[in-house]
Length: 160
Image (cartoon, rainbow, N blue to C red):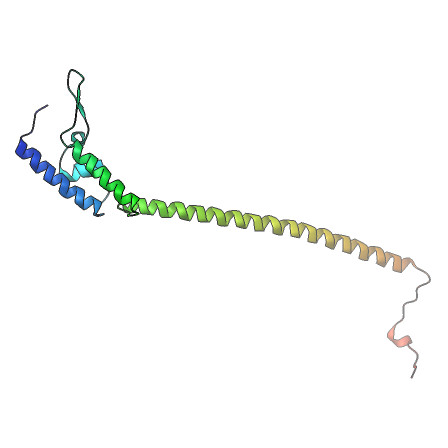
């Protein structure tokens, strides 16, 4: 892998820091996030420069911009811990999660109400059927009774 000159490395570090500041202020490019991928793309460097490297002997050495990646992650986490939302998609995700939880609660409450109303309807229909059966029984008993006399309005005698 070809080494870059100190001048090019300093130029890249300035570009990375400028992009880092923009991203951490919430100025995200369309389709971008507040992450290393976007940081590298916006700064015009490869993402691999943010990660440690291994030489042919298997020895690990830091990537040329690994210290900037660590700084970026520290600063981003500090903002998140302070309650700042850098990435609007993260805020949207949190809002949607809260809305989903609220809707689930409302759905559970409505299901409970539906169950209660269904039970009430079942009891009401049962009571109405029992009352109807009782009315029918009383009508049959009334029609079958020989000792009951039905009075009409015209058969009243004048008592004054």
